[in-house]
Length: 401
Image (cartoon, one colour):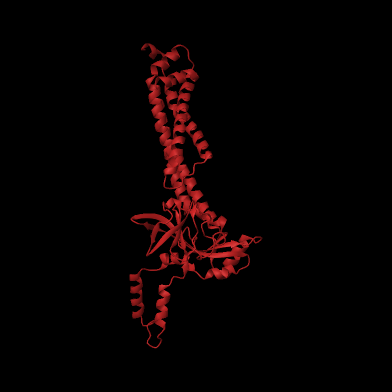
């Protein structure tokens, strides 16, 4: 039985191998798509891990700085830091934008970190692969390796130019965009401060407003204009909790007294994975279903075609007394062999292609195992059409009947 299937494969090995390669490339795409989803989940968890925070304090009734816009005053962290159970509290800003290096634009998440030392203040890059951490209050940056930036590169963020003094890795947003860290005050200016023309237009409107421009109150107009040109906002406050204190109790205390929304690590992960990535997961799932149907169709067509090409040989086998189950097993083995060749090609192609994708692709063994089993099932089911046709062949066809 095995020798029959093997001899038949060797007889038409060219068509069989090239079909397996084509099927393998299709399966490779399937494995990569599963890896893209795994990579998105890994990026989201890495974002939370690298922040170094136990709690995220954000604008009330918002989903936090990663899912939607959040804006709170930058002086709230002082009151939060003084609350029981809080070890450290630090402001932070996040802004996804195009960072310019010479004539090149790189999409990145610009992160503004509060003054302090890495490891003591949450939000800072946890480790460096080259260079040093930021030591000045302005115009220095630490960039993720995925940006393609190097030590000493000059970056333009809004109106200011920054020098890359350190490089880090696996510091990415939930969407996979590499991070660029700059001092908090510079990040606030980049995110919230208007350009010169907008500031000038705003001052003109303020001067024209009689409520603010009162002759009897000479300092009022200057005070209003000064407040309009400042930027006392951040996206969130990152909080670390002291050892021995319950994180949920500290979070409840901040919600009660500060009237802000507070998320724990578990809640933030649910937002990232359950809400932000869920839509992409459904799209990838539908794509995988479509690829599975296409793969089944291809295997069924190829096995059917190969069976049609050897109708006379099948009739001869029946004429000499070969049982139907032997013929069915031969066709089934050919289909499974095609699936195994395709899976091997797909696994190899996915492994070599994954590092070249712009997004992080995480290939895990369990996905490969599931993919292998699914391929075997698809090939087994796809062979049923050819088996049904083969069993209906009349032995008389062997002698031209």
